[in-house]
Image 1 (cartoon, rainbow, N blue to C red):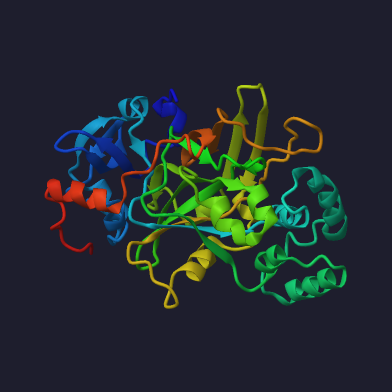
Image 2 (image 1 turned 45 degrees about the horizontal axis):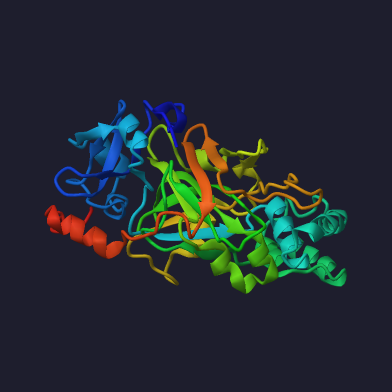
Amino acid sequence: MHLLPADVLPVDASTATLVGRVWSEDGGAGPRTCVYRDGQLHDLSSLAPTLADLFDFDAVAQRVQHSQAVPLCTLADALERGRLLAPCDLQALKAAGVTFACSLIERVIEERALGDAAAAAAVRDELTAALGGSLRNIRPGSATADAARRVLVARGLWSQYLEVGIGTDAEVFTKAQPMSAVGCGAEIGLHPRSAWNNSEPEIVLAVSSGGSIVGATLGNDLTLRDFEGRSALLLPQAKDNNASCAIGPFVRLFDATYSLDDVRSAEVHLSVEGHDGFAEHGTNSQVESSRDAADLVRATLGRHHQYPDGLMLFLGTMFVPQKDRGAPGRGFTHVPGDRVRIASPRLGALHNVVTTSDRAPPWTFGTRELMKSLAARGLLTRTTPH
């Protein structure tokens, strides 16, 4: 993709603390941790060889702001050469599902339509009539939620998706493997057998190994609606394929200019443009989430489950594309070549081009290759963050 810095940066980039990774050939090929400053990407490797290390620092934004990082390249050059990587490395890649009433209804539609896009419209009408907006303001796990459960069960409309949408326990699943996420400008991959799928525009939290939320970025939780609709047990195949997880362009660290409250009030915009002239647009408003971002982190990481390398957590989406593409009633699905833009004013914009997972560049640079790269540059002897 031909991208310029203005296409990816947040509107207040000059005051934001933006960190990420860039591929560099200088001094040994491999990824470098970096910070964006005045059009340049500056090397943070001497401070933290991995972003997992960086996110474990106390007062991480201040450490980055006062670091004596040296320039690596311009952001324009990194974008032109396709070297801006996903702003995460060793972290677990997790995602919260069914965190919005709108997407909850769409998950139920998938289940009741058994993965058949043509049958989805009739099921959508049935559920909308039965549920209306009644679930939108229900607090999961509350007495009101339990009363709604009883009504839905009586009408034969209860679902496993409604359980995680308004029940006590949030759905948190593994989106992809550490080191497998692709970055801004990269191709994003669909399973070649999928005929009903869509991008999911989401905010992604950067979380330290101790559970501190240190920043946020954007992500595409690309999903196969036909696979998951046939059976919820196919969720791994629906979510985790080659190049199916895109994150970027940068993690914006929390500081005096940006905080978790800004995440809670953020809007995320999705646009899809195809070579066939098709276009779809929508907005995901984080204020509509039925589960707070901090609660989702606590449900994921704590005494019950540790993540020693930290994690990246997708917060879910309320916008699911539904505009017909092709025959009436078939709904939305991606076509290879689609250009996808996920944007939020204060986080920037994540751009990707859709392909199939068997045609996307194979994933070959994993944890072992990263360790070899860091060892060759003498970066495996640094002290523990504090």
